[in-house]
Length: 519
Image (tube, one colour):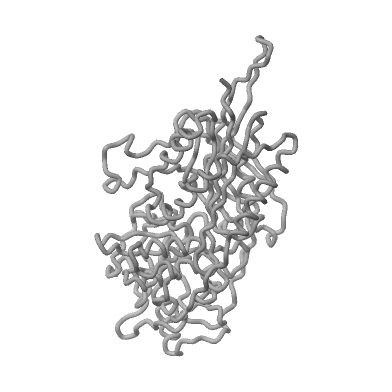
């Protein structure tokens, strides 16, 4: 993490918050139980449960009287991890190691880079990560009522009766081999058109986003970034699970809203369009519960990687920090392979699908898997609208909200920093898409410190997909940057919107607080 920090963790939902004690140093251990009371109906729980990391900064303050000395406590936000409350209600608990989402740029702190602590190349030693991890156990009491799965058996089935009978026979064989009954995923799923189809039909090469049409840039990274910016539904209903409704690319891209499992299908189809060897993984991950990941083979090295479609991050198969906790089955365009290994750890799972002792193939040469027929192969993307007015509106909204939250103090806005912050934000979308987070973050902080040496600076960038103004306000309030009680503190905010096809917007915010240094 960071040196010379006094970290503590908060757990919050809506306006309710509880916190841990303050620890010392960059490798803290809390061993505490935090409890948060939430009073609401299951259907009204749509927000995220937030685990935030703060640094408690204590400043010595002197008054005019030489004998008077007092302290002022400042809490600086360092990062967070968000758990959709509907996923926690469905899964009842999450445990293990999580990776906190850290700001791409964090002003006022020096983040230790791998190069500064080791001479070993990071590609050879992937266990070294420039990330902050937290071990935790999260549960909810009482748990959500078991969601009744959609009764889709009565729906019309697009598959032939012979295939339906064959799948029923294979299910009986499979149930004798599965170490855990919950690993079984029904191969006939419900689509948005109200018909049941085989899972293999969902995988098909679909048109790429306009920005990813093969050019000098890396189209795979553009596709991964685009999928990660699509909005995810937060409702607590059975449509989110594997036995729920599966969207085709037209339904998903027209609405830009979906469940996490649909994101995996779309990303897998984009990879098929790029000619990559890939599979759809159905399993359980933290913090989404039942969801899909994508497994693909890197053409240059033939190495396999996991990709989380919700975040756009990729992981090696042996990465113990991968959020994928359990694998139920792997769906390819030509077959479905059920995981019959007794090993539950993903990092120890074998991925040789030809090994009958590890994987159970649902189809065979005698009965091949049905293909295509679900996705719209000639889908046309729409151009995004002009964003200058929305960008100004977001900036005004943020300034107004911070001023309102600071009810007892005057809020001073310093616009001298804004051009520099805007310039940094304009580069961030490209850096986030193509560099996989391995850009030199200290450059941005050092530039600000050199240009404004007479200020003590603290600030950070935020990035997320645009949904509405209320969601932006909630993100800023969670960071608590407005709680700076220094009498001379000033603020600056910069907003940048990056438009993708179909009005999928990437919002970049730079929030900065500065205190003039007394000579």
